[in-house]
Length: 115
Length: 114
Image (cartoon, rainbow over all chains, first blue to last red; front, side, top):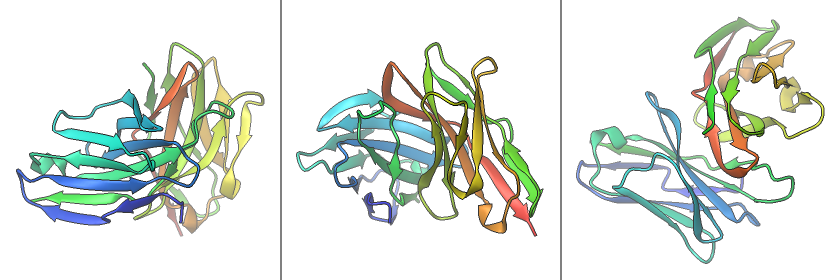
């Protein structure tokens, strides 16, 4: 158990629908990252939050949004889902600072299947 | 912007043989480098990291990596692999001036053959 909790583990939904993926970071970590892993695109960085604020943005579609709440958990919202959104979505957390290098602790992922 | 290249998408190797997984990066500034491993149906976990100092870095499970600044490489090695090393290996880079973003390479699938 890495200490990063992601729910749900599996999710099957239809095109056009909206889903929410949830992540609780490891205790003491202030930063949350979201990644999308698919066979053709590899591990793509979506977005990062630090202590409630957006810090970095990657290849996140406009149909996707995220936020980090005061208790530091984060949610990734995916809307108007398309078949191509089927992927494994990972959340990772880290403590910024210290040596300055971000060592990420990953959750087990949420597997989204869009039919 | 940084980028990471992993030259081999799949590496088959016999058990107890040595292995090297290659990683090259590009960045206009100094970087931190990482190797992560993903076992089947699991999340990624850190194998080792290079932050500064000695260019030879030792990690868990007998893996090591060498940072070569002139060749912008950070290759991962193990002298003798085990069946349990079968996994996906990802090289990653973060930029020392903006260490928020961690960029991963496409991954190398290591298959250890008994």
